[in-house]
Image (cartoon, rainbow, N blue to C red; front, side, top):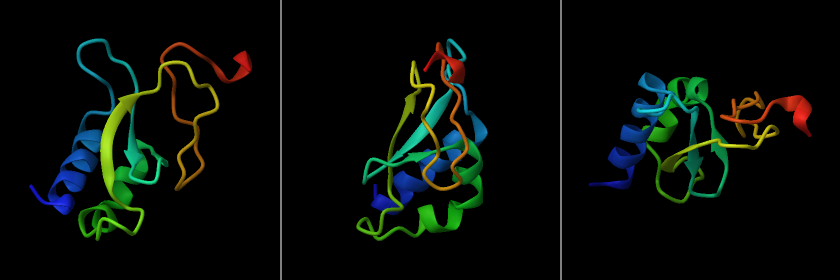
Length: 91
């Protein structure tokens, strides 16, 4: 599987299913440089993610659950990424 196809597959999965099953926990994408990506940006930046060179910062490498970070924000749009167990006022 190429870098582009894996990255695009993860973006499409996040866009279509932003919550883990089972459990319904909120998911976010992780870029190769450690940045976070929300569902909306996985959709809107699909072309950049799908045509990544692997060294340009657009490679999604994994999806993960935001368990307890109330201050996790998308590195593209700066929107807060929902957490499973923490609220923004828990800081």
